[in-house]
Image (cartoon, rainbow, N blue to C red; front, side, top):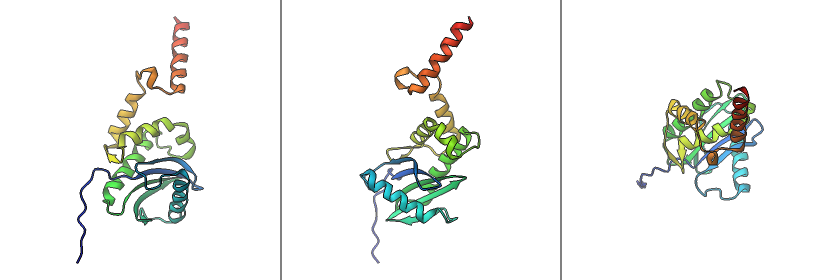
Length: 177
């Protein structure tokens, strides 16, 4: 009986994907070069969507990868790891992402509200996973850290929309004085 002993690694997540009802990419972050080109990534996403969009299960093995997924209204969430990865760890990441977004979007996790709050999604994913390493699995902590980013962030680290919103508020308050 041949058993291969793999070295333990902190790099557990290979990708985080969010697709819409048509299998189109809303968000994708790949943490390694399993699929180096955008063309290969899109082909993988189409394959993954075609295999999972009609099933009620939560875990799939596809192309030598472990895929955990969840759908809500018109969005499909995917967390992908290697075939040797612990499914419970990947599911913890998936649940943390979904629960964090659910709290941030006030239980309205759907395509439109997600697209309107993409900066929150980017920050949440970055708080949960960094370079494939799981950093956080508590949605309360993620929501708290994302909320901190919205307060008193230097202009050099804000998006253009955030800077314009801040400028509007400052002008409004200066006119009201």
